[in-house]
Image (cartoon, rainbow, N blue to C red):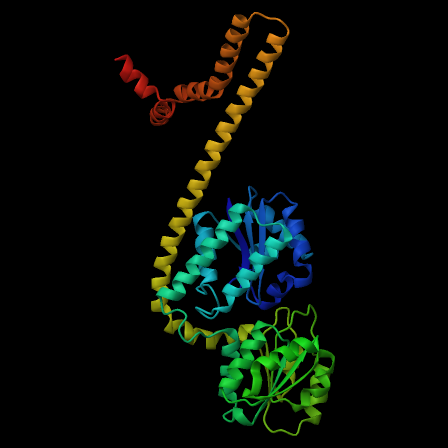
Amino acid sequence: MFLVLGINHRTAPLRLRERVAFDPAQMVAALQQAHSQGHRGVAVLSTCNRTELYLDTRQSAAEALVWLAGWHEMEVEPLAAASYNHSGRAAIEHLMRVASGLDSMVLGEPQILGQLKSAYATALDAGTLSSALHRVFQHGFAAAKRIRRETAIGQNPVSVACAAVRMGRELFTDLDAKTAMLVGAGETVRLVSKHLVQQGVNRLLIFNRTQSRAQQLATQIGGAAEVEVGLLSDMPQQLHRADILISSTASQLPILGKGAVESALKKRTASGPLFMVDIAVPRDIEPEVAELPAVRLFTVDDLVSVVEQNRRSRQAAAQGANAIIAECAAHWERDVRGADRVDIVRLYRGRSASTRDAELDKAQRALSAGEPPEKVLERLASNLTKKLIHHPTTQLNRLLSEDQAGQLNTARRLLGLETAEQEAD
C-alpha cells in the first residue's frame, strides 16, 4: 500500500512545523530507522512548509505517526491533530499535486519539484526506496512535467523567495539604493538573489557557514551586482550595513537574536527600517526581534497574503492541471495492477514449481531405494494432484458454503471448468 502522512502550512502553525522538520544531517539515519520499523519503502520530504512521509507499507497511518512523533521526541496528540494521511489513489494524487506545486503556499512554484527529487535521491542513497515507491515517484515526476508543459501553471513563477522580495519592493521604493544581506547559500537564497538583482538591488552581502559555498553563489550572480561574501560567524558584526536581510539556513537553532540586532541598529547610519525575512524552518531569527521598533520582521507564514494574490491568478491553470493528475493517477493504478498481476503469476508459478520439485525429489529417492517404478509414479501423480488442488478446493468449498455465485463463476473461468463442461456436453 502506498501511504502519505504529513503536516503542511495549511494544517500546522510554524511552531509545530519547526518541531517536525528533519535535520538534513540526520536524514539518512531517520530513513533507515523508519525502514527498520517494517516498511518496505520510506522517503521523507522536509521543507519550510511541509514534512511528509511517503511509505510503501502494510502498516497504518497511526503506526507511522507514532514513529514520526518518537523521532522528534514529542507527544503524538498535537501531531495527530495537525496531520493528514492518504492511501492508494488519493496518495498518488496528493504526491502529484505536491510535485507540480498545486499544494504549495505559492501555487505552481517550481522549487518543490527539485526538493521532491532530492527526497527521492536521499531515500535511494539510504537504501530505503522500494521498487513500488520508485514507481510512485516516477509517476509523480512525469505528472509534474506534463503539467508544466501543458498548462500555464509555471508561467511567471512566484516562489516564497519571490514573495519575500516583493514585500521588500513594497516597503522600499528605491531598492537600487539598498544593501541586501543574504544568510545561507542554498537554493532558496539563490532564488532570492536572482529576484533582488532583477528588482534593481546592486549591493549584496552573502554569509554562509562555509565561505566557499557563499563564493559559488557570488560567482553565479557575476557582474549583475556588487557582492561581498563572509562566514556566518561574522554576520552579526556586519548586520548594521544591511537594509534588507533574508535568511534561509538549515540551522536547528536561531542564529540571530534580539541582542545582536539591537547592537546592529545602534551602528546603522541608513534611514528607514531594517527589513528582515526569515524563510527558514526552524527559524533563523528569534521571534523577539520583531519587538524592536526599527525592525520589520516577517516569517514564512507572513508571506501568505502575497502568495494568495498569485494563487488567484493561477486557478484556471490549476483546473487543467487537476484533469492531468486524474489521468496520470489512473495510469499509475493500471501500472500497479499490472505489477500485481506479474507478482501473482510469479508467486503461483513459483509455489507450483516448489511443490513439483519436492515430490520429484521424493520419487527419485524412492526409485534409488529400489521401489517399483509403477508404484513410485502412481504415488507421485497422486501426491502432486492433491497438493496442487488443495488450496483451490478449500476456497471453492468456502464459496459454496457462502453462496458466492459471482465468485464461483469467476472460479470456473479461472480453473477452465466452463470449457470442460462444454466439452462434456
